[in-house]
Length: 354
Image 1 (cartoon, rainbow, N blue to C red):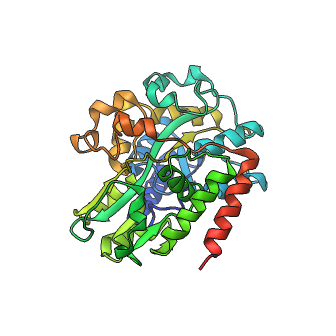
Image 2 (cartoon, one colour; image 1 turned 90 degrees about the vertical axis):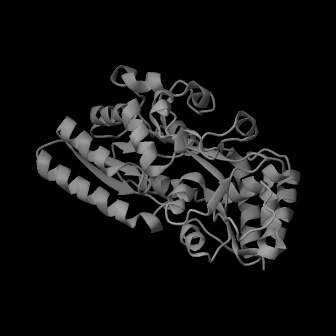
């Protein structure tokens, strides 16, 4: 399963170059003898200027390596990759890694900024005591479309069933996200383990597939910006980046509820610089830093004291700050254990169908 296969990359190549430049500059400033923090994360997931600032303040060098999916990250680590000090897996993967002894317990004495973590979001976290993980960014799934090109828009997942949009629609190439959207449409949990409910979801997805151009996690942003696609399954932060180039792009969270993913900050059990990793976690949860980072990548850091520092455009956007009603209907992806085989079977049949 791929949660977000570098979905931000196509429109953010410049950001990646800027991040690389910041890292190189930091290396020159810090010198080779300075400690090195090795971070393994999603593409374009922190403002480069903030990385450079941390390097200056700590007298260190930060080296960023990126992964395309939680599973790719997990597989690389299980295959023996070492040397990473900080990771940003999604919460369901954090649960698995913790159960397998892959994560180091966190020292809260080194993390005074944890007091700023939003308790409302922490209540939904897999690690509510932040024993081994700290929430970093919230990612909301929904639907984006081109205003003026799509008529009679209804804020529902059932928009994927619109035959008049055939060939101009995409859904995520992501097992849990896409099956989860169908489950939500039918009034079921995105973490359902009931075969009958998954069978209903499969039937619905087969109907929707007739309208799809493809399943995709990467190119939908470019396709939406160019007008090739008119309606797409999308992550909120990606859409807000596209909107900078195409103002008529609109985004909604379906009325049935949605999938909220949380990427967490964790320290591997074999980290070489655990104290520096703690310092970086604490730095990222400084309210001013969290606000600046959110404004740059347009994903929300669940840091309650950063919210007043955000521009009104972010604070007032219902695709970032969900209404209480939509939040109550939405869920986070959970590790479903052996039931994952049911999802794989549905997904394989869906992808191979014509």
